[in-house]
Each structure stands twice: as structure tokens, then as C-alpha cells.
Length: 214
Ligand code: HEC
Image (cartoon, rainbow, N blue to C red; front, side, top):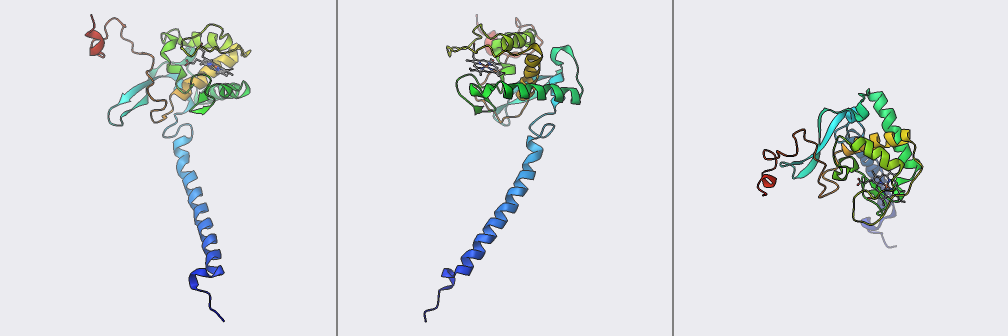
């Protein structure tokens, strides 16, 4: 009677399968918990909701070789400082609005969604809003009635989705909060709105290249 080689034994392969499944399972649970501090609001890469009370800038980080969000001085959204709880309620309402109106049918949020319209991850920082003084009102007006072609050359228009003013403001809060998330440089080649307080006429100190122009 022929003897089965050790490597061909059924019990060895059964035990291996059980061990591999078990160890992978434990490892995945570990990775899940290891990731949470990075992805939860108030964690390493995602700021708490009250960040909407602050100026959110986006600057090139020489050491990391990529653009990263920079949280600056107080700059409350719609002129009102909110507590963490109030900010969370507002941002959540904005998120629910984006889900209810299915913005991802056309847009991407953090890279997820459809490619018909611009990515909204940094929409808050889009230079197309013109200036940081008028941006909030312009965003609300655009969301409620996006009939005017905003800026880009994609030749597409956003339809009127019947968004109320309350929903539009909450959506702007959601977009402002999202722009503060460290997305490791995504989207690439995005140049943010100038939010410096210095008048645009004297950019010499910050932008030598512009000063060199006639
Ligand atoms: C049917 C497709 C469609 C849907 C749905 C849609 N959008 Fe848009 N959106 C567009 C298009 C197209 C543009 C570009 C319009 C332009 O530049 O004039 C745009 C532009 C925008 C902009 C300006 C983007 C920028 O780069 O500054 C914002 C903000 C925006 N949409 C938010 C939303 C939100 C929030 C929702 C969901 C409530 C939504 N959109 C749903 C098509 C859509």
C-alpha cells in the first residue's frame, strides 16, 4: 500500500487553510483599528468639524513634496463661530444633502463618484470663486441656482437641483470641512484660491515671479 507524501496529505492542507484564514482575519481586524485614528474626524488626517471656524489653506510642503491643508486663523463660516457639536450637525446635514441629491452622480468626492463634473474635494478652495470675501455667498447662490456657467472649460452646466438655502449653507460647510482633509496631495496640480490678507497689488514678498512681470 503506497504511503502519501507529507506534502500531499489532506490534513496538512486543511490545517494550512485554517491557519492562513485565521491569521489573515486577525491581521485585518488589527489593520482596521490601526486605520481608525487616521480616518475619523478629529484624527490625524481628518480634522474635527469645528475646523470650519478656521481659515483653511492649501500649501506646498517642501519636506513632503506635496500640497497639504494648512489650518490658519479664525475665519468662521457665515460669520458665526460654532461649537464642535453645532459644526458636526451642520456638516452632517451638508453630507446628507450631497447624498440625497446624489452629487456623486456627476461629481467625485475624495475621488469617488462620476467624472462628468469637477472633483469637489477642494471645491471650497477653487480660485473660480474669485475672492475669499465673496466665496461663501457665491457658493450658496451657485448651489441654489447653478444656471450661470461657473468657470471651467468643460462645457457642461450643473442643473438646478432644488436645493434650499439651508441645505446649500450646510453643503458649503461640508465642502469647507472636506477641503481640510489631508488627501496626500489629491487632487494633483490643484492651485488654491489666494487667501492671503495682503492686498493683491503687492505680491512681491510672496511671489517674486509675479513681481518680475512688467
Ligand atoms: C447632473 C450633474 C450634476 C449633479 C447631480 C451635480 N452637479 Fe455640481 N456641477 C455639475 C457641473 C457640470 C459643474 C460645472 C459647472 C460649471 O463650471 O459651470 C458643477 C459644478 C459644481 C461646483 C463648482 C465646482 C468647482 O470646481 O468649484 C460645485 C461646488 C458643485 N457643482 C456642487 C454640487 C453639489 C453639492 C451637488 C449635489 C447637491 C452637485 N454639484 C450635483 C454637474 C452636477
